[in-house]
Image (cartoon, rainbow, N blue to C red; front, side):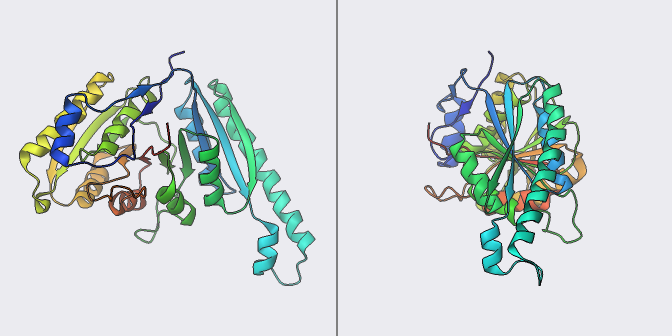
Length: 320
């Protein structure tokens, strides 16, 4: 069975940047291949159309891939709702319980419908139900179930800049130990942009997407922003792009490369706006990331919030 899982040891920590890029170039990052496991995907779903679309999207992405998909619906905790008074006046606890169960039944039925896409592509798909806070339950299940990445649905547009993600998305992005895929629309992935700064997390992202898109072979563009205000040299920018390109070549791709100058967030958002990309990939940690704090960088979180494209935020800080 040609199934591969890629592990970059450690917390995707960013070392001294020039040393890291040259180190990667000479093969000093250990990649462990495990063939005994299938890819496990956890999709967080609710009653919103976006989450059901995300489930269908995950099934489509993994069609005929050695993988299994679990769709998790988190029911509200009735006890907490009663304690907090989160219900309409003159409504009894039994009324709340009945409404919660009816909604859960409806969502599970929708999950089964969406799972038909998975089953058609020979990918096992199951519905799971938990009770509590959605973000906390998704994070807990992802860890305890040893899932390889998390998929969430998100709106493709917002009338207010910066409000493209809700509280659940933000919390999962902040604290997940796995890659997080935010799906914003159902589109074939033909053009993919990797925001590449030369960090170990960026390198891990390349190693992660290689097997995932090996059959579909989208056009991949590696983009590095030379941050001159931080004193980054043109030589360093060229070296990082070379490292990324060689990594993807080794994985069977022939990527395009781009180098821009300026602010990292602004240049990436500008490229996404004009480039008609179907997916944006970025590492969770930038070069200012504190060494032992496994929380997504402000820059990565802002990019995930502000772009209208699907986003894959990579990190892998699970033990193993």
